[in-house]
Image (cartoon, rainbow, N blue to C red; front, side, top):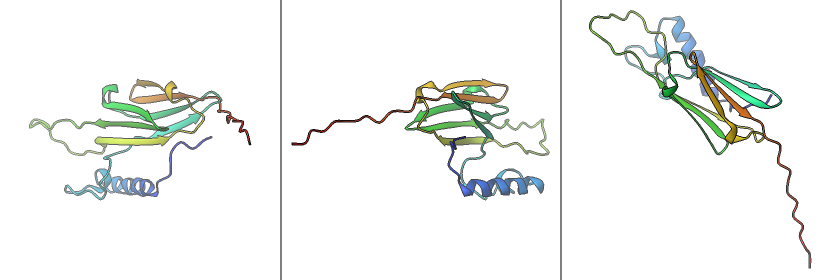
Length: 150
């Protein structure tokens, strides 16, 4: 299976910190009394990447979002998924006791392998799950150029 995303040790550390903070009742990314430990995307959706003989499939969990909240682009071999999950507006007749879900903007980027057809990306959004399918392309044969020597 080809690796479509670059490993970033900061993301691993942030994930560990988020799990630790949730365990002790903190809200997102170590936030307590309005303080953030990290200054980057507010959250990052979970993604599964699968490969068959004919294509790659990327599935991203985006619960509580609509297709209008998400944008997918491909540029120079990089697939980008970005969007924002908006938090409910506070009202005076509702008291919030606990907020554990993540809100705000997110951005995920994946470097596509050389053997994909960037123009073949198909997107489907259903029940909070974004599914992207990218067809594989035939590997390009190197083009031989004959050079005359005088």
